[in-house]
Image (tube, rainbow over all chains, first blue to last red; front, side, top):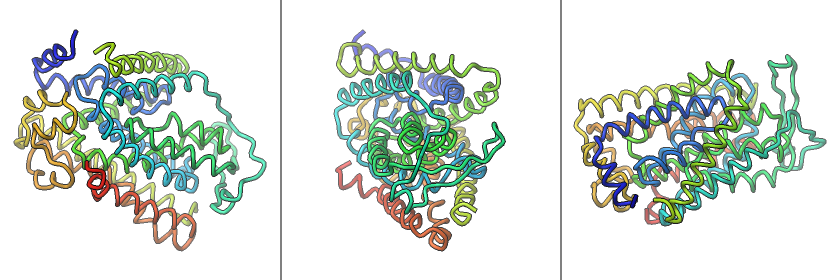
Length: 293
Length: 134
């Protein structure tokens, strides 16, 4: 089917079908996101960008706001319980948010086909990273680097699973800052959110315990996505009829997902997510290269 | 108290702001799809344009950019922007609120917060879009 035919077909459908379809799809994504531990944005952009009629510019703007809403909803309880660390999040969020502005401006300036192909390649790389990613529950950090010591990047949190206080400190701060700049750039460019990258960097590079990394990742994401979201808002790339049902769908889905968490097998859901990302990434890549419109 | 209580304060502001923003979004969607508030761009027309690249969409729809949406908040579609913009403002408001606490208890983090506010205000002002020609 040619692109023009696709456009004609989608335009012929009643407009209200799309917000409803979007709400249903994002509701499902919200459930899957919680069960697999993957942020909603990274699933939303390639799937909706590939299988819905909206232009990728609007999908990316919505992806950022959707990831932002999810992160903002989860962050307060994680911060209040001490499982997330604002002290750790702030320096990396600063670098990431500045870079995400550059990413957003770059993303809006590049041709759609280039963005679609680059998104496809990025999603395939993320799926591979998720498949192979290693995690360390309590990484060994013998001593903090000078910058980490200066910023006081250390602390303790109560681990409810083991019932003990876990002390932590981090190292390799300059490398972490550099990596968060790259993550911010990609997040702004593709509207992906960034939990998929934040957690490995906090955990494996900086040496933060896994639970602290997962909880703090959302705080970093909320700052990084905020600055890029403004760029999309001012550009006119946020359509309320696309954005609002998506945010509400994913938020409700996340609540259902949190209830299902007790009975669902996380590893199985994670494999389904990786398969979904591979299909959506491949579709985006083929769409961007003009092989499958 | 982590960062002199700033972490707890930050959490409370995020929590309150997010709840208000989500309520506004739900109310906005209802007003938009029910036709309670007449839209700037009717949904039937929007559905014919949302597959266009951004610049072509803007030219065809006369949709606002920058802060121009403020003049259209009485319209169903742009009434939704109140919730969206609040969502995008929560972090900056929370940083601003905890800045005095950080200045008293954690100087390095106060500096980081001040720099973050500059970044966020630069993005929120629309200045960077204008410089980039967006």
